[in-house]
Each structure stands twice: as C-alpha cells, then as structure tokens.
Length: 343
Image (cartoon, rainbow, N blue to C red; front, side, top):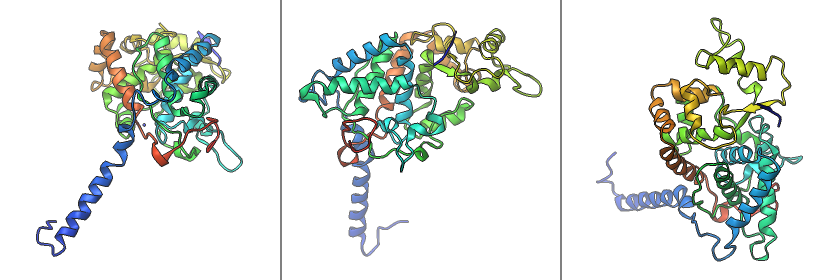
C-alpha cells in the first residue's frame, strides 16, 4: 500500500633505534583504531544510569504508538550515521549558517523525521532522570533505540555495547561516496561494506532491514519504466509485482508518495525479505542483486528457509556495525542537544 511519509635492516648501524621506532609505531596502531570498540561495554552506564535501557525502550514504545514509521526511520538513521564518520550521532546535527551538516546531504534528505524525533524523545526521557542527565550520549541512545525498534517489530533483541561518545564534527561533504545506492551491484555493495569492516554475509543480513522499510517511487522508477532498449521493466523483477509497482507509482507521481519495501509483511522484521528476493520481489536493484548474483544467492536461500540462522547473523552484523568509527576519550563528547555540536 502506498504511504506518505559503509629491505632488510639487520646490519643497519642504527638497528636498535630503528627497531624501537618500529615497535612504537606498531603499538600506536594497536592503540588507535581497535581501541575505541574495545572500550565499549554492555555495562558502561551501570554505575551512572543503570536504567538507561528501560528508559529508552519506554520512549521508543510511545513513539511507535504514534507512528509505525518510527521503526524503519530509526533503523535507517543508525545505518546512515555509522557509515559516515562512524556511530557518533553526527547525522543528528543540524546545519548552521557556517556549516552544512550531514543530514542536509542529498543522500540524507529522505531520512524520515520520526527517526530523529525518536532519539530526541529518548534523550529527553533519559535526561529527565537526575542521575542520568548529560551522562548518556546521543550515539548510544540511537544504538539502543535501533535495537528496540527491531525487537518491537518482530526482529531479534540483542545486547547493545555502550560507551560511544558523540562526534565533534558533521559535514555534508563527508557523506560523499559513503552510502550504498539503490542501483548498486554486489561488488559495489561488498566494497562499501568492507571499508567499514563488514563482510558479504554482514551486508546481506543488514540489507534485511528493508523488511520494514519504505521508499519513494523515484528511487526505483528506473526498474519499472524505460529500463532498457529491449525491456521497459527490469527482467529480474517479478512481472505481477512490477505491475503493482506501476499502479502505485504511475509516471509523474507525487514525489512524496512512498511504498512499502516488503509487499508481504511490511510491518514485521523477518526473513520474508529473503523469500521475496527468491520470487523477484526485491524493490531495489541492490536488493534483487543479492539473489540474481550467484555469489550471494546461497546465503539468501539459506536465510529464506531458516529464520533463526538469519537472526543470529543479523545480531552479529549489527553488533559489528555499532563498533564502526566509535569515538572515545578526547575524540568526542556527550551532547546535551543531539542536534548541536559541542552542546
């Protein structure tokens, strides 16, 4: 139904100094990139704001009662945040007269406001508790809210690692080339996800978030109108489904019109996404390619027939996603206002 809405130095005279320098550089590398994720902990707020998870969950539940869009909007917000400068809530920051922030990049303009509002409302609920005020980052609240919307829509619940700080910068330019596009092929998807430490299996599992997503017609119009000289419709698209899409998204349709990405169980986070791909009902090229490409098809087939295996893979993938580019120490802070840097 239509809906609006990542040379040999053994004889060198200064061999000892060289070796010492090499060791220092190696230790520096070890203490940099991996250190941030190593500092994350499931009990990070236990001594400061022990009820943070239940507080966030309560706010998320209230928001979902207001609109189902809360679910896909929050998941997509988390993904877009983590793939650009890491999971640091930089996508939440509002532009100013002197800085055009991430959220105003063309690839982020379709992020639904309900995702932002979910984090804002949860942050307000957390800060309303005296002991928690200004102690919990927007980045961690977004990570928790994402877990909650997934679980509350039928997906798996999973422990969330905490301890992220909020980023100190947010620029539209940093988004360029960092987010997957609807027309991406398998190699492009794998390359982008690998750049964020995610495997092909992780990528396929995370793609199933489209099980509860929605899309504006313009994002897939090329598949149902003038696809190629030989075919108006993408031949990998189920014919009946293509007709349905044309009916919901006629030419010159109102650009505000959006449709469900999963035509079967649009309000449930489940493995029907993979069953749809088997039937040619992947909305984007980047969805359907997971089945049409023989290198990824076995995974799609496996998870279409085994919900438990899919959920386990998804938990692994989203946990890894939550570790991407985490800010700790002097690399970030805790914003009092998620939309304003340094506050």
